[in-house]
Length: 295
Image (cartoon, rainbow, N blue to C red; front, side, top):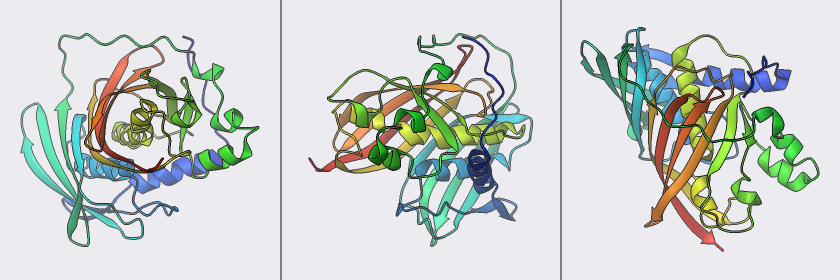
């Protein structure tokens, strides 16, 4: 697979990405307390990837710069109010010789809406092996969302209704394009829609944000459902990620997802991230509420 060409975003795209970067740049209220704002959107709740990303920023700012996050585990407890700031309290659970552990609680109206545990590690050498990257077309051979729906104005308006700081190019048809149930994978290329500074924690937090954008859609694919064609109630319940190698979010990353199971009004989905060169960058697992309100 050939190397990525330098990304030259349109000015509007770069502004949308810059807005997201500012959203992740939390205000520090005290040594271990931070405050974040939310995007003003039509939705009635804060996007889960935003809360997880901000909670990781808060945790990372209490850790030495030579320790990098290698895993996180989060629980979504209450819906966040996008019209109110979110406070993040960090507990410095442990600083060992190799690992540092942090616990972050996101609060609104003095109630927890999200909790995050994250582990950070000094760079160390050791044994290595990794999963093989799926054989897929490169992103340059796939249409942008605007190109994909150029002749479908209603669907184009639905899909592009919100800002897109993360570019997506689908390898497999998204849930709203599929005619019936499928047990196949959901794969797409993602990257930040612009250029980013050289801050490793920021790139990890942006991948955390992006990982929540499409993962539960993989559950819908198994049942021939989509949020475009059916009325659904969906919400992330928990989210876990493992980061295996450094990466940049302004370079293309393949996001390969599948849903092994669903039961009890909940869907379970997993995903893996690969660089263009085939390196397994990390993995994600999520369980979410998925309820069909109207057929």
